[in-house]
Length: 218
Ligand code: HEC
Ligand code: HEC
Image 1 (spheres, rainbow, N blue to C red):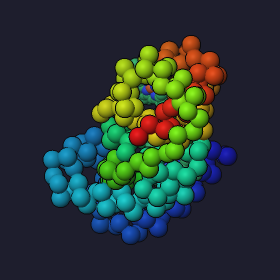
Image 2 (image 1 turned 120 degrees about the vertical axis):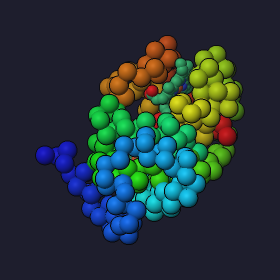
Image 3 (image 1 turned 45 degrees about the vertical axis):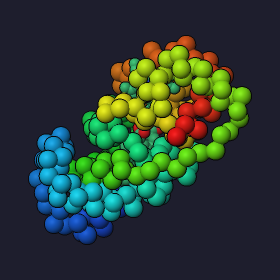
């Protein structure tokens, strides 16, 4: 019962949007597979442009938490700005099929049609990330050392990830901390993540220094 409330709230938010984007929603509502739709958009700049505009509209619903243009103003909510498209789409898929658990986001994603999903991904991937000031320089240097031993292998020297792997550079502090601890300690809200073995040996102090370094990367 309680699990239905966020979904209903999300539906109510989207009712207004669907009204505004009725014509575009027509295509999305026909349950086009999101991968097929993304391929169509990649091959057709005009369609990509239309979907980007749908995404910009959708982002008004998300801005309350993820910030305008996906630069979150809440340390516990992740930035979406500059995030890699295939990673974002994979998270959408995982929230939808229950591999990634976060009740509110699951409801939100269920309320979106495929054009809104692709549009949102195109919109956020194209937004610039606002750099953050350096926190504690000593802590940051320790974090850089740990990053350079392991994390860079997948997330890249700049922390920007790649087509499949998340950008973590400039990510929000509390989100980084809780995400790393959940990978390490559970409850594992992200099924079969490769991050579980990669956080196993981190101490709380290691995590604090990684948070300081990664959040300040540009
Ligand atoms: C009520 C606040 C709230 C709203 C509104 C919201 N989100 Fe979220 N979102 C969150 C939180 C909190 C998380 C982190 C969940 C976790 O800890 O796993 C998240 C995570 C995400 C992620 C995964 C990011 C990552 O780095 O892995 C995506 C993608 C996302 N949201 C998209 C959206 C979209 C698109 C919308 C608008 C349609 C939206 N969210 C609206 C709070 C919100
Ligand atoms: C073997 C490859 C690999 C290594 C090494 C690795 N990661 Fe990851 N990381 C991933 C992948 C893939 C994801 C995508 C999400 C998932 O599978 O949970 C991810 C996700 C993350 C996330 C969540 C991003 C988001 O937006 O929610 C954070 C934070 C993160 N990694 C930090 C680190 C840190 C810090 C290190 C070093 C201690 C590290 N990773 C090492 C592959 C790796």
